[in-house]
Image (cartoon, rainbow, N blue to C red; front, side):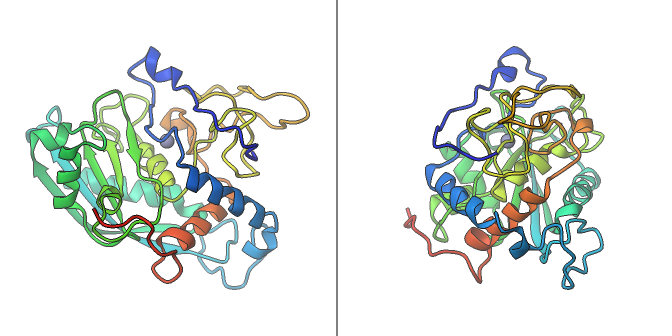
Length: 306
Ligand SMILES: [Zn+2]
């Protein structure tokens, strides 16, 4: 749904009524990224450029069902920061983290994106496990644990507090060793890994959703009916979805065809309900990748070191 220059902050009403509902911290999109997304949205009107819906010889990735001309393998570093070595203490075994990694590869298969697991770290540190978003303790944790460059994904599985299931840094132009560089990555609630203890949200799709933000995707309900995620093949929706309501249709009338995209990974539905990224989202991922993260093509940093 296209964006009409009405930046509205979507109410996260679900989290206020139930601590068991998905709540993501990425409800506000930085203005620079919104402006870039508007430019991306104009570019991808010509889908031929990206090969969506047409057969492209170069696409040999058998699971890339959109026949995108691209695939991309992304290095993945997983970190578990726990209070003590029990399930209640936020400890996740290496085996369960590997399950989470494999789940992400399944979820992203249709887009041609894959993740190469480079390392898993376990750190017992109560204050890091409980650190609040963007605070000095969280920064210190990431300065100690973050691995790789700006093109590499770091996931931190820990206790987030404030009802968050996850939050993630959107892509930007950060200089190496700037605060934005160190903060780059996704924080994931430790209970959401596949077969983990978070009822209705334990198929590992929280990490998939958050990583979508890291790759430049917005919520499908961003800005409501008159706002939009700036991707044309995700139907508009006014509110985040709770559960899996098959007939949910919050934006009606000729202007807003289609039911709400409750099955999209970038909504708030139950894990069992989330099954897809659209072709337009796959295109956006590659646009964002090339603009912000690909070392060969990304823009120069604008945030100086601090
Ligand atoms: Zn989100």
